[in-house]
Image: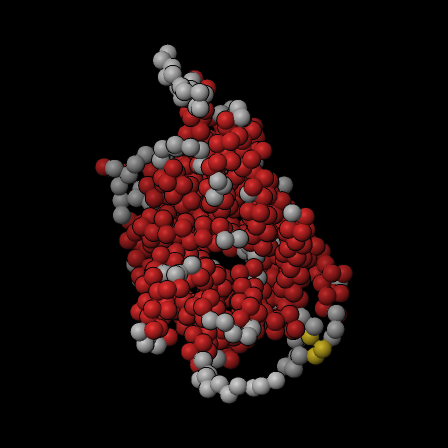
Length: 306
Length: 294
């Protein structure tokens, strides 16, 4: 085998182009994440962290106070997610289907306006809604009364029974725009010939949607589900803004994000606990990773089937 | 009712009652949801110009004539009560700084990943893309330790660096999609003419991907401006407070002063809303680019 002598200068420009992004990303995202995960196997209460294997995880999942808080937060977070899947994504799909009807006037305006809440800060959204739901101002409660549902009035944010659902629905209200836009993009990408063929065959709008368009956007439905999952387990701002870092009332709205914040940062009389903090973060990471892997696995199976 | 005659190829009439009714229903639903989406925002803004008692008595009225007052805004801008001006400035510095470097570093990296073939290109791309799925907040404990060792806690610079890291993955993803679609001939022609890779990038490529860059800019702006977590954890003192954190703290302070409260909320919404109205097309196009390529 002959080895030709090639005088190619080292492509330093590739390094120059890649370096800044790679460095900042590694230092401020990849490394902290991996290091946090590593630290969850250590007891960090002394100056020099001591390796303790899975002890932190045992404490978190089965220990005295920690387990109760952890499983409660995990359960609440799942409920938060389920409500988003049941409310946010179907509504987004409906709006997207409507927005992509043929010859719709004002399509862009509707789309822009409906997406507006998503651009707002979660803090602001939380606060505005807490004002609207505030019984003293009575905006929401009076609206209920005016349509005869006065008996259904509850202390929406203050009652343990209703607070989680209320907060979840506020979040749904804010974020419907995102999946809606993704669905619109997917629906618009469907070839008109397919739809026209179905129409000529006599199918009406409803049938066309469910038999032709929806199956073709299943990949997007999957992506939306995963993004919802990841986003919901990263949630914090809304609960913090409306219910405080303890997920009031009585931890009914405590989710992984608030649990993490409270543990790591400390709140009122409870000092910060970085050891448990990293453990909670590691568990959250595990949950998110499981969700993403399930999604990827599902995509793989669908790809190999076709 | 007039029915237009149709040729055999298009058997469906356009003017039947069914389709008109469904049109009305479609617009009804869309309009209804639009109102639901905008109502809380509108309510906040119109009541921010009213006195407390009028907020309670006439919440749905426009703040005209007697109802109008600027007292809330005055309180909010009063440096003794709340430093809206300072917070706005901080938010602007952090957001604009982040956008600038995300665009610069992101475009450079996207270019290298999409244009040049080198060993590890795919792995590097995957490594960067993972950041889209994994929330940066999970690394907070170590991030805070690391930042404080560099004396970056309590600084706007620290925030900017974190936000750059957070937004790079998606920025690179979107921009590299656009760049891959650029025609080969253009680039080769420039190279034949003797342009260096740097000139090629800065003078030819960047202007060509401007639409993608605008999308990424808007995309980056919104979560950065609206973020509560990192300002709360790392930069909560007065001098580096952002608008979002400031609003969060106002709400504790102004519990009784609804006018000031609503003024603060309206003010905090304004920059993002303005930018959104101007750039909504680009933002949505950017989202679409991500979705379509999946």
